[in-house]
Length: 190
Image (cartoon, one colour):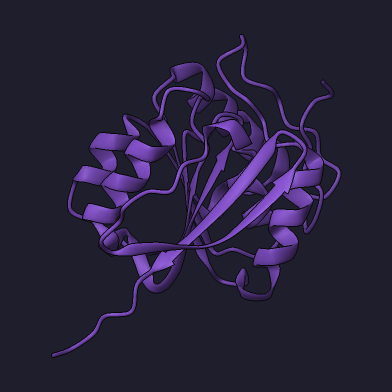
């Protein structure tokens, strides 16, 4: 697999360093291009939380295309160092915050800011995407009122989840990558 790269925006064409070892699964250029075609209309000035960030490719792409802020979170020091190096290579450190830590503990904490997008792309076949979505469902304040959560999984991992505050509204499949989109349910007043 070729090195991941930024495919649009101010850092277009810049190569990203891969995380050493086999612990990450970078998003394909095709899936990333399609994802950002969907997000582009509302990406300007947006904030993105990139969970299980790996190389940081999704958050870096968002910053390159006009997002104002991206928080990168990964529990592996090698990934955090790779993200910092990739931010320096692309010149996008300004709007970035890189954290070493556990995604589930982060989501369980009281939200310290709301994000337009929460991107969830954990290691496959361990039901981690479900755990992350369920944790986000308990703390929907991590998302702005019209925010989206997006899970990147293998299509074989998919199953419908019973959620209280989020609801699935779309799926897009690109080869062996499935993007599942969730939004906050409207608040109904009695």
